[in-house]
Amino acid sequence: MSSLPKADQLLQWAEQQQLNAMQLEQAQQPLHASVDDWLALANTLLLFVAGLLLFAAVVFFFAHNWPLMHHLSKLALAGSAVLITAVGAMLSTPDSAAQRAALFSCSLLTGALLALIGQTYQTGADIWQLFAAWALLITPLVLLSKSRASYLLWFLLIETSLWRYLDTSAHFWLSGSTNQLLLLTLGNLLLLTFAEFALPRLGLTKPAALRRLCALALLIPLTLGALFGVWEKPYQPNLLCYLLLMVLLSIRYWRLKADIPVFGLLLFSAIAFSTALLAKGLDGADDFFIVNLLALYVIGCSAGAAIWLKRLLQEHSHVG
Image (cartoon, rainbow, N blue to C red; front, side, top):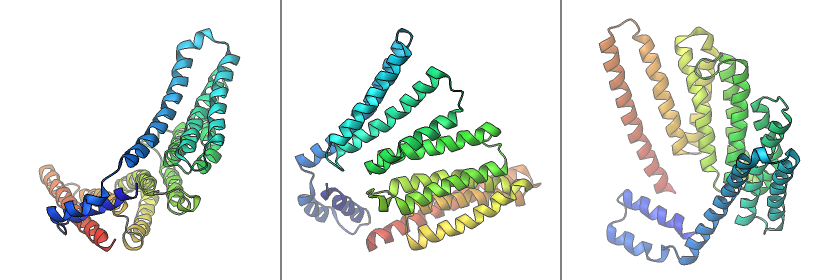
């Protein structure tokens, strides 16, 4: 599949008007995907779809036959499914698509087994403990798989367990305390740091998509805390945290690393924050004037940010 990134680069040059239609056609002649390329892509996709379908089959099998089965039979079948996928991973070629798919299926089925144990024996554990235990148990599988799908599942489990843990002590979303927002921000910052520095060293290829998802997860509570901090004094620590992290992240993803999608997220977060500051400064003015001025400000800033990001992307592609 090495020809596909080259073809993508040619299309970028064509969009930047560095190649005309004839030059693009001539340059693409040796880069058309072969039958082997399509088969390799189809095999990879089908393997992971098969893993998802296997997980769904186990879940729906138990859901349909639940009243008719003994609890030991349920546990034996679920454990057998986990064992079969684990053995399949062991017998597969190391670092192959088949091994990654088997490990991904084993990770999914581990969660189904945990849910079955919890429901059968009524352990009384909070739901965040289920997700945390699931993430902990599949950690060796995820590290061994070197698969973006497995890492995505792992990150989602960690994120869900953290969010559910914070939600047990108070109504968190949009109405939580400053400490809850700070804790969620800290957790997501650790995930972003892991995705940025650890994933490439663990053998994961192309970790950019995971890094950008972690950046988005970080910016959501970070920006919310800053918006609350503009209007409410108890959220001043969130506001200070926002300003500090925005400076550090901007330096990292604009100057040092030049990750345009992440920098775009930072820009639009800054637009939301500055809009809140402007609304705070205009508090008490005529409502019609405030609404129209804020609308013009958001439209102007968004358009300016889009133009800047496009220019940065063109410069980055030209350098690359």
